[in-house]
Image (cartoon, rainbow, N blue to C red; front, side):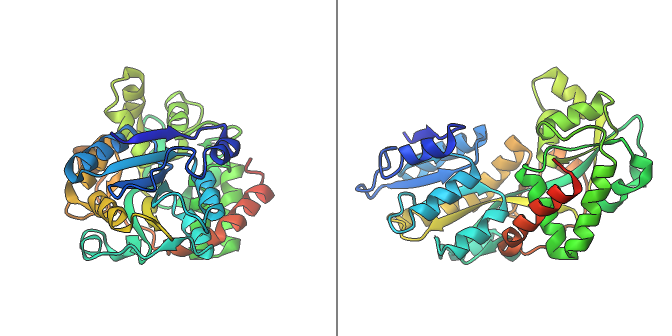
Length: 340
């Protein structure tokens, strides 16, 4: 059985307190993989169990927030405790690469399973999720919104619902606009969204969808996989929200990703690569899509009916390895335009 230790909101102090083996990482056994993860979904626990059963290796998993884990990995660089990082948000790739904290983990299997856009020498995309526009089906003609820029038009004044600028999803979205279109264009977009706020930013993505369904605003920015999870939720209230709220995939839809990487100095390198290969496999990619509403990155993995229902859409071309370079600029823009 794997050992799972949650590093929650007690945050930096908790993470520091359980470093250097105090959290129970096994550095002596050959048959383990030590993992830091900011993925916190039920499907991940199912995947971990499947990996252990199929390989005979034991997974030791320490969970924490993405930024905390990046900070910890950087701090432990000279004496790494974990072998693998599993996290959400490609914006963390840049600081980890700059800190020389990652190691080449590419293999023929990974190259075969994951398209080139979603991998590099020292990282591998696991899943993607689209940052889309949610709309109230009773009030909005979706044909009026073709691009992200369309929601900045005056006709949507007092209609846009968003989560705070501290959201890593919002930071990655704006950072991608800076990378692709430049800082001035990105700032103009952010200002236009702020001008159309229905309320002060608050809550998570599901809260935005619920607010749209409740009539607090006609539009929201959210990740597609949250809608997919609500659509098949056993909670009738969440399922009802999904019925009332539709999704628009704008031209050049931004995809944020979850990814895996091997840490430099990993003590169980072969096992780490086995884990990454396992996560890239067709059956595991299909499971992520089915159970968590994400998009698989392995093109051989079939899409569930929910994701199929969204149809084809164009995807933003962004260099994920460079995305984190623009995160500070995105934060600065949010502050300047009043996106709290």
